[in-house]
Image (cartoon, rainbow, N blue to C red):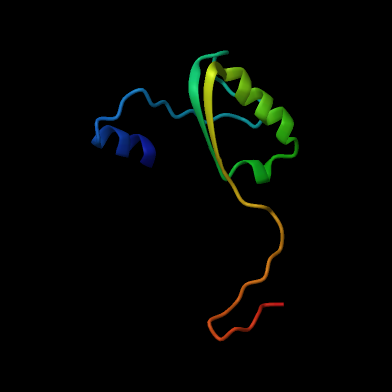
Length: 85
C-alpha cells in the first residue's frame, strides 16, 4: 500500500491501515485516537450506522477528519465559458 510505504520511508510510527467492510470495522472498541475518512461517506447507504461504528472504535478524547464530496450532478464549465448542460 502506498500509505504504508510512505510512512515507513518517513519513519512514521503508530499508523495502522486496515481494510474493512462498510459497517463492521475490524478494530477493537476504544482502540483508536483518530479517524481519517476520505471519499467514503458519499458511497454509504446508511451514513449514521457507519459513523456509529467509527465512534465505537474511538477513545473518548477522539478526533475525526472527514473529506468527501456530494454525489450529485453538477455543471462543468469550460475555459470558453460554456457549460456541459
